[in-house]
Image (cartoon, rainbow, N blue to C red; front, side):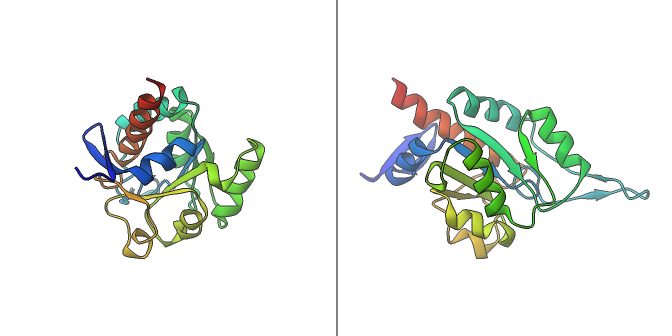
Length: 179
């Protein structure tokens, strides 16, 4: 580990990323490709199903314990997104063509700014949010067009523990500050 890195729960973070984590009070998440592996199962009657990691729920509870809120902001309108968000107890905005405006509205309601926000995305429809927040994060298998703007790229791909990894980082950084 170099002088500019911090070890966090087995994950090596730059000191810059660790410092950014300390300022974040709200994490916005895209859904497809972040909570899921970006696959969709389509049944003959048109219903859809997706694959998510159960570990995400435990991770999101960690964020809440440290006073960090979470919101899912999705371009899609799909009942599976609502159902998963409800089960996780996370605010969800769907059918969102203007993700930065939705995030700004939610931040404003909480008297926060983009300087106190992180966003986790995976594709070009997340780019404007990633460019506006203090801590832009992409999943391991993010599209190259957004990977370059990330301050942190998860080790796990979307749908395979990436959300949990992000939450674990917050726990490790914020927990170490409380000691």
